[in-house]
Length: 315
Picture: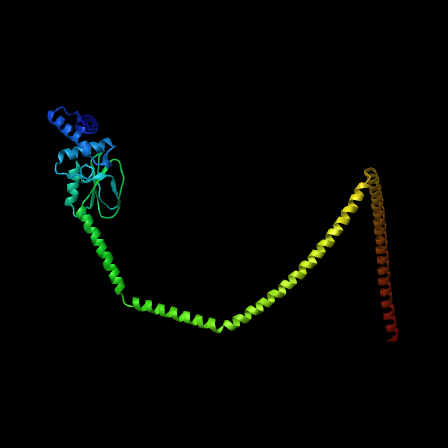
């Protein structure tokens, strides 16, 4: 027991600003606070500064109740309240008690938080939620939180009640049900009346399917016969190809190819000569056509002059 108290005292001496005090009162206070470390809640243990502050708070507040695990019930916990901002860096709150008291005195403050590193105090309203943090402690004005929760429940109940009283809601709902029943009856009647027609359509569809199946079988038989014939022809072609390959002479094929190329060159040369002759013939024909046209023009001119002379003589 003495060893754990010594360890706790060392933690507190490391973390609190009063550790350098040499007065007998300060030393006694530190020993009491060190003994109180064992009563610190689990969420504040493991952080020397927070653990020391909690132990000091327990040592200076004798009326704190105990939890089932033997630790003290503190009016704060490690963490912060996110959102619901109301007032930040509240003045004249150097201690946890001062921050807590200032929040209690402000009717709009629901949650308070105090930063251990610089004694900053913030106030929060009802909105938001609690979150974990290593250098803050957070407390709640339980009566206001509970009152707000009940008020919100009452508001929600009143709203639901008002919604249920709105005129026409039940009537509209009943009308929708009636329409659905009516629509269902109509569809059922159509189904019963049209059952015979549907049966006829089914019989017709069956006959159509039978015809299509028969046609498919016929097409399958033709395809099978065609594949068989194709297979036979392919086997015959392969046999011929094998015989050709067996009798293939590369040197002879090369000579034949060379001879074919020479013959092709001769044919090209002859074709070129034929084209030249054709061009010469066309030029000659063009010249003859021009001579004939010139002669026709001359004859036409001479004929016109003779006609004019004969006309003059008749006069």
